[in-house]
Length: 239
Ligand code: SF4
Ligand code: SF4
Ligand code: FES
Image 1 (cartoon, rainbow, N blue to C red):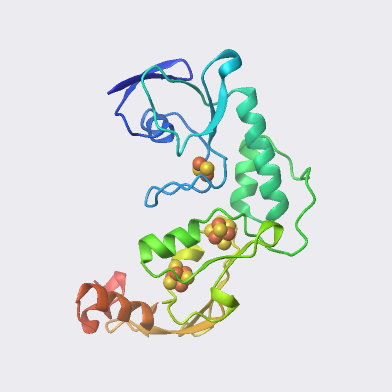
Image 2: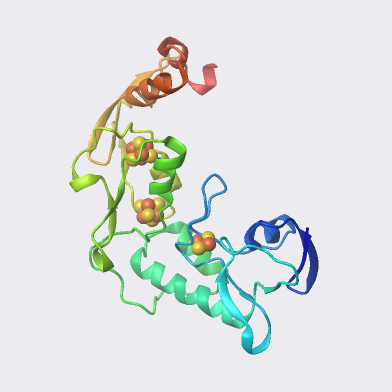
């Protein structure tokens, strides 16, 4: 165990935990955007910045990556930290001005609608948080999407922007995306889901007939788990 201080509170924590983990466990709220408990931290957004150390040696670190240590002093709400978060948020809002999640978080941080930075001109809502790519790779186990280009052109997409033949249409990337950049549509009758430029035929529940998951996703799950397809063809409500 190590002893540290967060916001003047003396706290004991297990070595190896991050500042963010320890803060949350102790009821201290630190805003995050690219963090998800199911995924390894990536340090992409910097929204979780906190200040460590005191006086002239104090520095700003990303709490989702920084491990706690004996004697560490953390300030999660200093003016310096608030300024970093505000600047990060202004940049993100300029990139994705229509994201409701960002707007809510901006309000909490006291940032008002007019961003200081010029909104992106390519219409992209992607803030490069990598949540979708990491989810597809480590939770779904497919790796159907990644980043292309560099600098301001950098964007998440399928390889060569072509329809991916390994994507299973599960929609996990769209659900985890905080900005609505990933578009997923369902046909009016519910039998086709479209995502990443590809149409996926939806399977109907063998009990109630509701279209509930892409056939490709069920085939993939069956292949990985050995559960027969007939057993998977039942929606969550009928199970
Ligand atoms: S819909 Fe495709 S790209 Fe998105 S998480 Fe599922 S497999 Fe990956
Ligand atoms: S598409 Fe969404 S989840 Fe993926 S990197 Fe961009 S903002 Fe993050
Ligand atoms: S939550 Fe820590 S860098 Fe995004």
